[in-house]
Image 1 (cartoon, rainbow, N blue to C red):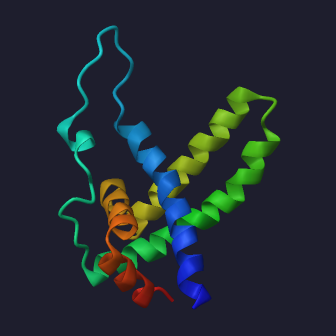
Image 2 (cartoon, rainbow, N blue to C red):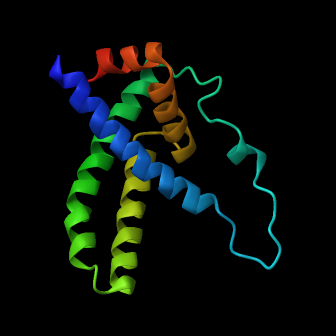
Length: 134
């Protein structure tokens, strides 16, 4: 019974890291006038999200890879606390690898984030993900 909890902890942590990456990638450059956020960012990505078993399998694989990347880069980020520029470079490198891992599994960051939200919010989707997880 411990396996699903470990999976959910890792996947939710990984998803939260990737959510930040996806939001950062979608954010327009700063301008003097504040523009309203795109409609896609104001809507809940989990709404109407009922991922297929194939999508859940891709999500699980991507989550595991994102979690491994996060574990690899967290010590590097912590070690670079004294140098903000170096720390930012390390974070950007990790983000690129995380996005690449998600894309390599056949998901966009938006799909990944939507599935993550669906797992958090919908007990049936969460149960299906737990059943699929290795």
